Length: 368
Image (tube, rainbow, N blue to C red):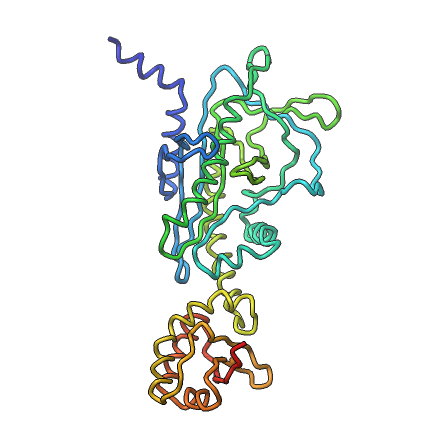
């Protein structure tokens, strides 16, 4: 048995590329997981994504994760050809600025649900200097082919299609698994990269004729049905030999992500009690925190205790303070307002949950 043949033959696979990319990321201070498994929801089978890399930074009370899902492929005989045409950025059926992010923090989850948030995110990335990662596609890629490097003969799109679908499905799996897996406050932002150790060619049909040109990268917005829902994702095709010099772009993106999510968290809490939609996100938590002190304060005065879920509040522009309502009657409201120990606990809850340190007052509320 000649051991040298094993070394020679393994060079023809994508494993060498996968290892090289992992080492490049580790050298740039990214944490790397190789061959992460996920469940294919369509085929109910276990598959794997070549590499998952991430940077994590603590911001305020939550962790920011910038995540890269990476497919690594190698082909010595065939080039990867991306067939394209003129792009219509006003196409109402396309999403040229997709954002895939998840958070279990109520403030960030709310901010991520605001209509138009993807554009706000991309605009902020551009202003921060991290816009290269989200560059607007120059063309619309509508098909792929592996083509023989010598003859140009089309082969098939199997390897490219597999790279695209594995990236999108693994992203969907991670987004679906995070709510069950992550317990501490965090936010994740995902990026999909398809690396190929071969030639990358753009075949452009914009002029009506097929014009081929060699490229190092292409931004592709993929559209796919996942869990019976149409999903758009940005996939960045890259020649393997240019990836290392582009890693700093993703490190800059992580810095930009930390700044953006920090700003979004501050925006959520700014004057929150003057905004019903935002304040409602945290009302249940507030009720839970003050329910026991609320009960004790009323019982000490011999006043009937209503359910804590009846507690609500509104902002008084006239008094420039929060009015907390509960069906406790005029006598009960007066007792709560005079109870310094109870007010201290309510003040602490308002500060901790809403970051509000202003004045407040209890008032009776009709329970219907």
